[in-house]
Every structure is written in C-alpha cells, then in structure tokens.
Image (cartoon, rainbow, N blue to C red; front, side, top):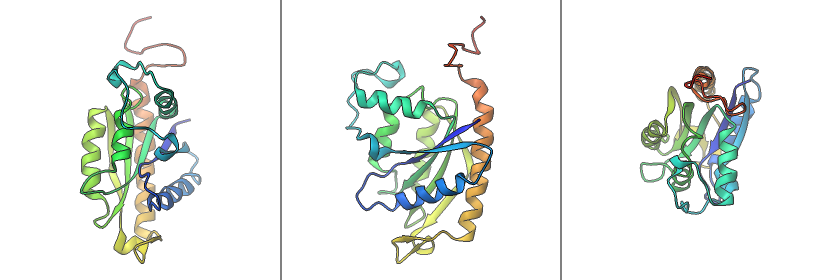
Length: 197
C-alpha cells in the first residue's frame, strides 16, 4: 500500500502547526487508499547541516542524518505542513530537506500551509525546493489564513472549505505517489528498473 508522511516543519515552541498536522493525520486515518505517518522535524533534532559530503552522495557520517534518512525513505509521498516565516518556510524545514537527496526523489509532495496570508508565499518557495529534489508537487493546496481558520488567531478550527480541499489534496498525493513508484529502484530487492538484469 502507498505510504504518505505528514511532515511537520516548524520546531518553534508553541507552534500552531502541531494542531494542523494532527488534523491532517486524523482525516488521513479515515481513508483506506494509503497508510499515513507523521514525521515531526522537531523529533529528529537536526543541527544545521553538518555532513561533510553533499547529500546526493548518500554517504552519511552522523547518526542523526541516518535516522532522518531511514524515516524519510520509507514513504512514497509527503504532505508538508508549514507555516510562513518572512515569506518563506521555517529554517528547520529547509535544513531537514537539505540533509537528504535520493530519499526525496520521484515522490509526490502536497502542501498544507498556514499564516497571515495562509502560507501561500512559503509554499511558492517550497515548490521550488521540492522540484530541485525531484519531488512532483500536486496542484491542490490547503491554505489556512489565521483570520478564518484560527479562533483568536491561536485555536485552529478548520472551515468546511479547508476540509474539502484537504480531501482533494489526499486524492492527488496518493494518486501521484502510486504513479511515481514505478520510477524508483526497488530498494528492497536491489533492483533498478532502469538497468537490465
């Protein structure tokens, strides 16, 4: 079955993204077309990128990198939950993305964003990063402005429109994740579909 990770990108104390990621995970659990898990960047305590070799080499020297690599690699696609910091994504999320390369390749990416403008500018940047990492980003995006989706700008209460868009996002990410699976090496058996046996 297709496996999708919900990636929580903010590590800030008091982050609003935790409630958003929990909502995404709870709705994902209602579906039967994929399995979902949560990857909270904060749990991995990644320092500012400290690997001596570029991630495209795939030769990691630190235990924290290897743990992050193993966690990311087991999924077929990702739904990134991100706030908007200064018109872009949180530094912790960019750092986490930069740690790896092949683990992201030929996988689907969707976005759930929040902020004063719903996080749309953060996702514009995130789409460019995803493209460089060879992720295929889907069109649907869940946009959560503070003014309409957060009571008193703090308590997350999603609207019916957000609920509907989230389902469309799930549909697209799951479909694309399944289609892209054929492009990736079968790592469990060491087979690369692009190489004759």
